[in-house]
Length: 231
Image (cartoon, rainbow, N blue to C red; front, side, top):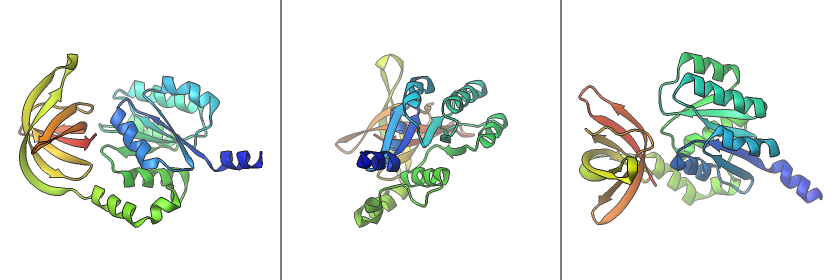
């Protein structure tokens, strides 16, 4: 009994609410440890039953594009779990109205795209902890080297062909230029409109890879810069 109480006390519960599976996976992998329970959901409505049964230390909440929907989700979350810390995540413009509401509720804002190191830093800031990951993982030299490699993008200029998934399960084939690349993602420049959530297939030599668009911006030359995370 004493062991069970101690187990409950040291466990941290993190709720993830984001409609993109690759974002949920990235957050879960970055925060996974022996003393952390990760609960990923695609919407606040789907997460509400979990919140009724379990108290969560932290919630990553994807902000909806419209102010009305974003504020509604935040209200539902705080109404069910007022003591849960919140990190709002967004890959688009956040209005002053939403920002004021986030600040009044003590929420932090994390912009897409983000790296595992930023996820852990924001988590520590939200929970008031010096570290969030398991001590053994932090002390492991191989893990530290991997973290450094993941955070560094190498400049490169290379044209690739890619297949972009569209509605109905179809694909369109386009070409673009890689501007920089790392082990976890790349920056792609293309003249075809891409948006967050789009999935891509492409190849480097004979090896086929897949990626998902985390963010995209249209420049003055009507080209699109897109942040791609490998999946």
